Length: 365
Image 1 (tube, one colour):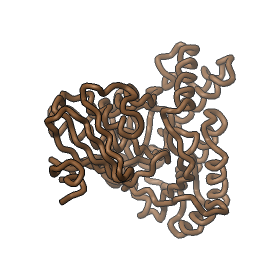
Image 2 (cartoon, rainbow, N blue to C red):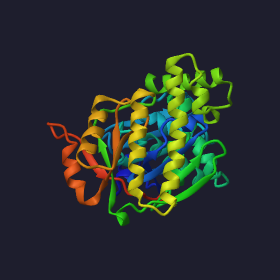
Image 3 (cartoon, helix red, strand yellow):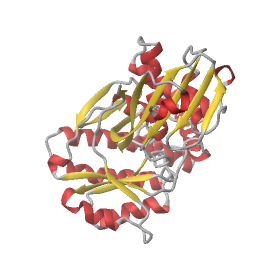
Image 4 (tube, helix red, strand yellow):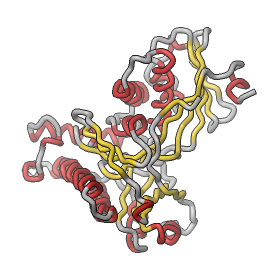
């Protein structure tokens, strides 16, 4: 008997998988109508799902042994249930499911590491309910279902980067996404063939999109957009941004405008026939902008970047929403072990792994 059957007395109707993501470049640009360039990680969340007849949503997680959250579907509302089960509940509320649902989550995307563990949960469950109940839904509509779960149910004001990456990425590619018109382009990314690796360094200092810092940055971008009189910061220029009288708004807007330019530059470098190590300085410039203009880095992330560069990395930057989480480091494969060791603090507590561009969400069984 499976672990699912032990919990719920029946086997699942299927298993669906959605990956976490690492963003090569393009932080906080998604809610400003800008450009992003993520890859899907080999780390993923698996959702085993079966419909019920008693009107309950029952949710368990292999990472929370002994915990079973049960709430009548009719009682689901933003903030109830709270915590990790809320990400599942936020998806369920967007489907006609009066009979209820059993869900068992299992995954290895590090939580709070800036690698979109929450989007992996919402996307795996959304894909399952699409297949079981609404096969007419497009992938773009599934992105919106997963995003609304985070925005409206959990209260995390994310854009569409994380959900799009989890659902749309392909193995061996980075996803170039224009978040305004939602057009996409798969950019080949075989770093190993070029003797390179994209090292992820998880500092273990967890962040949360539902906390205030992320929302504050979004509000500041909205205020800068209004002050500039443009539809979105994507439409501003470096020259117009410098006319903002408010220093904080000027720096926030400058990050968005220059970050959009960095995404386009990285795409050009990766598709122009040159060596991909050339993107390294662009990644580092992105970190400087996130640290100085957007002010969302941490001493731990800054130390990882500085140490990696001193140890011979071609580029490095923090990744994700900020205020904790992980950094990505572009390094020669031959130097991977040395750089991995160099970025460890004295306690040696940072988790490191190589980010290999992996498949997006799909049904497993």
